[in-house]
Length: 437
Image (cartoon, rainbow, N blue to C red; front, top):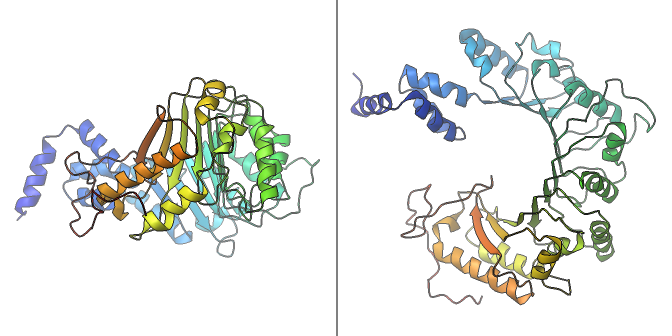
């Protein structure tokens, strides 16, 4: 006999139109536990949840391909569910696509992320004939020739991400033609995150081989870490993107060396004006003493309408205020220009209506349950910005977003998070607490 709760669930869902239920499931797509629970409610609900439950796949070995093949054999329509696939294969486990056995092409996959040997992956590309977005993640020891062959096999891609990658400093020379035709002409979105390219400059070599005609979005993550995208590569990419890019994200992470920081700022100063730029986002880290000055160093962006500075918190402890926030205020929020930021905005970014400072934090962090602490952090931030002479009070907006940059909501009555039950065990600072440490 069905339980009362099951009966109630069936009654509830039977009254919701399928298109509305589908929208509900779409917004719970990131909550696998919720989707698995919904699968058990009824056959009709199961039919609606399956596409969302299998919209993302990860093939972490030959066995996962076998499991997928068996699932599709039982329910063929599942082959149309995946939209995003991540493939992580060891070259010791597999030498070619033939090792995984026959797999029907995944026609609806648009994004493919690869972790492993690029030479092997070139043979997998036919499994994703309609993919237009590709990522290379945590991959190393590939030659420039293998990279060109891989990118050539991907066809006319729209988006490409390099994340924590490095390649061997050997292989194809500058003048050689890759085996597979390389075509980056349709590329609109390029992300470069923690790429070991200090001396090799393969981004310059890629641009010399095939140039995007209309690059719209360019993102740099950890530009100048120990294994950075080289200054020369960053400068070349920024110069190339300046006429067309609409969205630019910079995570400079300046090195400790003052001469190195000065060279980086000189690079920003020598870039052309970003005439199409509409959105500029700059990350602020504890070591990024020059991050605010990038706004002054750039020649300008006459069509900019969104300027955002992001401050990220990711430590799951109760002392974020003292361990992360206060050091960041002291080290990162520095302004070296003679004019105020307000003056710079009026001259170089005349269409920009506001300056947003975003606090980015995963939803599990405790200070989401501490409204007084959050308000204290906002007051400290505004006071610091005033002290360094930005003069942007009329522009300033402070936002709280999660680690996916989705704006967070808090209850009006008590300031607690809308997405979580009240956490009565959390101790907040007193509303009367001074802002002094």
